[in-house]
Length: 403
Ligand code: ADP
Image (tube, rainbow, N blue to C red; front, side, top):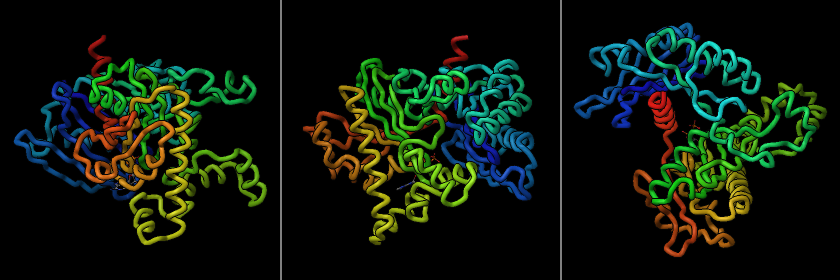
C-alpha cells in the first residue's frame, strides 16, 4: 500500500510517498515559491536499484493546483517516478496544524469535515487555510485516494484541564476556544513511541520528557504514552525560545511594546513571531549560525544559547514534577539531533533528578536512536530522530485498515 504525505504551506508543498508495507520512502520533494514568477520543484526518488535520483524543475506554478499536478507528473514519470498511476496511491495523509478540540485522532476528510476544518481556521490563520488548500487540491488530483487529515494538536488532546486552561474567565474558553492546544504532536508521538519500543517499555507505562528543537521548539510531558502537558499554547508562540519566536513572555510586554513604540497588535504579533527568539537576540535564526558566533565568543550568541538552554531546563524541572517518574528525556529535530553543545548545556547539572550525561557518548552518537547517559543515570537520555511524515503515513494507514 502506498501513502502520499503532504505538508501544504502558503507558498510550498512538501511531499513524501511511502510504501507503508516496508515503511520506506519512495520519493520526497518540495514545490516551492508557488505563486511567484519562478517556482521550483526539488524531487528525490529512491529507486528500486538502491540509487537516488534527484531532479530539479524550474517553472511557473501559479497555484497549489498546478503545483500538485506537476508533483503528480513527477511521481508517474517513466524515469524519476515510482508509481504507474494514481490508482496505486491508497491515501493522501495531510499535515493539518490545528484540529482544536474537535479532532483528537486522524480523520478521513469529506465535505462536512472540510467545512468544520474551515471554521477552525481562525485559530491558525497562517497555517490551516494552506493545509486545507492542500486537501482540496489533492482530492482533485488523486480522486481515488482517501484524504486523511492528521493534526499537530491531536496528541495533546489528552491533557487534563488543569494543564490546558488559561486563568482567564471561562467564557473566553467556552465561546472563543482560548486554551492550550500544543503543537508538534506527530513528532512528540513518533519519538516517544520509538523510544518506548527501543527501551522495551510498554507504551502505556512509559513516562518521558520529549524535547523537539527545530526552527520551532516545544516540549511535551508524556505519561503512560500520552501527553499531559506541553510548552506551546493556544498558538505555536509560547514556551521555549525558538528561531524567530520569543516563547514565554509576560503578557504585559504586548501592551507596553504597543504603547511605547506605537505598534499595532499585528505589528507586535509579527515582532514576537518573526523577529524575536534567536533572531531577536543575535540577528540569526538558524542555530548553526548562532553556534558559529558562539564559537567566536560573540557575547550575544553566548547569552542566547544560555537563555535557550535555561528555558528548556526550567521545563524539564516542571515536567519531572508533573510526571513523578521520568524514564527518558528525548532530544529530537534539527537542533536536538545535531547539537552536542545544546544537549550538554541542557543535561549538565540535572543531579536533582539523577539524569547524568556521558559527555563522550554525547559527542559520538551513531545514526538512529542513541543513548547518551552514564551507567549510573536513573533517567535515559536519548537522541531520537523524528520522522513526522512517517508518523502521518502510519496513522493514515491505521485509519484505513480500521475502516
Ligand atoms: P523544522 O522545524 O523546520 O522542521 P528542523 O527540525 O529541520 O526544522 O531544524 C532546523 C534547525 O536545526 C535549524 O535551526 C538548524 O540550524 C538546526 N540544525 C541543523 N543541523 C544542525 C547542526 N548540525 N548543528 C546545530 N543545529 C543544526
